[in-house]
Image (tube, rainbow, N blue to C red; front, side, top):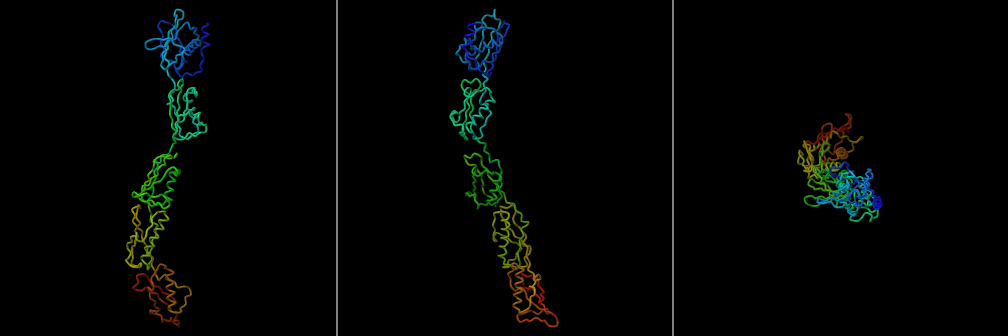
Length: 457
């Protein structure tokens, strides 16, 4: 009994969890009573701790054996060696308990293997995808380890290193930046954990190559910028735009206009914390609709000015649609228009075409001819005859007022009610036969006016 008390007082009781199990129990033949399982024995226990645990297990199971009744051996492949108090149990060690006097103690001998059931740290499910403080990193690590091994204790079972230094060496508010390494290591004699895991702080950058960006040819800078912002609102400061055209670098600024052969690339800036990869835009031909493009020419207008007017009208359409195209009369192809200095009335089925490979369809718009008809004229109210020159001036003013683009003069002749041609010395007949009147007749040679006018004086 004295020996039993001495052993009890000399051994330190252990606080522990069953991270190791005992397996492969074998017993001697011929005895009737089996010894219990010794699940409390773990790797890295000392021989003294093992002996105490065996004695304690006997006591818990009401097996009243003293140290004089049995011996504990370390069993190797070739021999059995008495277990020394300072020996440290290793994984897969085999222990053998020998009952000394079976005539008195009818228990079987027993051997068992101390298994390594420590949790592997490389099985931790943990990611560091944000820049956290040292305190936040440790809290995240310790919570994850607790989920894996609830009884694991910091400094007893594991340590946390940040870029090779113990985390406690840092101020708790220190920011663990991207690309920092966080290592979680099991301590050498941990009975709960083993191994290590090395984590890197990597921010979850969005891969812009997954996007699809389509730009219309002839799009202006503002339209392109709006399209990019719709797809990738936070690109500025995190990505850059490069444009090449026929091997030459093009600046992306307020003067930029998309062309069909542009290579338009958005590439993430090295070191940014938001984006990765690059995206090449697809340049497509601009879709245009010229159905509402109303083009007109006026008879008697100078042809070169008329064509420029068509170009101006087309440019106004492009500007309204925010299409980066500017045309001049030299870019237009006109069919059905007579080759004359002025627009003539024998111009029929006139079409205006503008061909550009960057458009899905070419401009092929019908051009309406505005007729100049003297039949639509009306002299100013209250016109009173004074002299021939005043009459001519009134007629010209009226024509110009109704047809401002008409540039021809005296494309008509004037006759009275007797069909007499009026000249500068004409005097109207206001006699008893009734009020005189004049008739404006288109000159038979005129190519610009389509009909005459009866003008009552």
